[in-house]
Image (cartoon, rainbow, N blue to C red; front, side, top):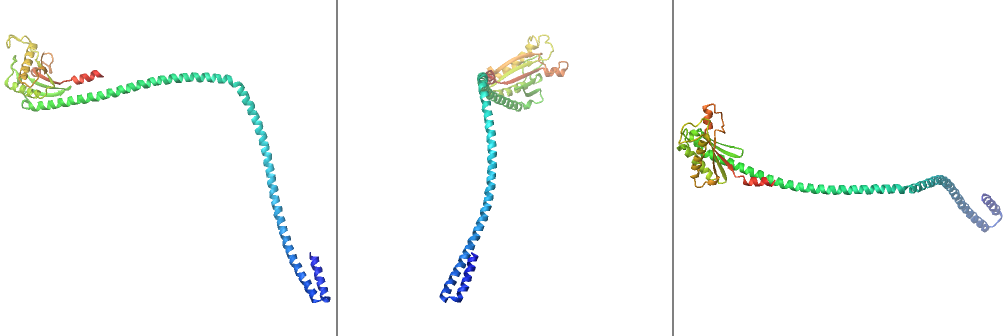
Length: 321
């Protein structure tokens, strides 16, 4: 290309001297066109060099990638071969296990049937125990309810007896210090009157002050018709001698007559239900102190009025347990 340009310049120089202006102009135009063509071709050449360099770079990259792919292919081939061998070994092992598994399977099935039978028996036993537990639970709930009702009833009875004791204490307050006491114990109320308040020695006739005290007790009992009343006569251990009081045989006889005398006074109150009254003679056989001293004998000679709430409801509930 450079030789052509140089030749063109030489021709132009030569021809300039011997050709016309028109020819010169044409040649000069051709020269200009050749220069342009030369620049274009130079640019194309540079582009081709650049493209060639890019191609070589890409070729190297592709070659490296190709080598990597070949390496991976070889590795995969190796893995595939190993996997194929392992698969064959597994297939052989499976075939051997399958061949020998029938007996083991039958044994396991027999064991499973046995276990299922045991499980069924356990479930039936558990169901029976659950039913028994439910029954016991129901009974427990019922008993607990009845027990609560019983406790409430007993508490109500105790409260009622406490109120009765307080009422009696208030009604008999005038006789405090005269051998009369009122106390509550074991669910009952005890009104104890010493003989000095009620009777003369060897007599069962109640004195005026003692009668007043018994009448006051009767007024309280009239307001409590559900109370049963036991009147007990007690004596000391002195023997009955002679014909005291019209032929009393012994202390037992005397204690019974004294208890009956108290019952008769209480019975005078028309509001008291006679069926609730009981007289009993205990004689000398239930002392509260020693009979070795005069003080002890005086304490033992007494009338005890024992007030007990009716326990029919409580007894009925207890029978239900």
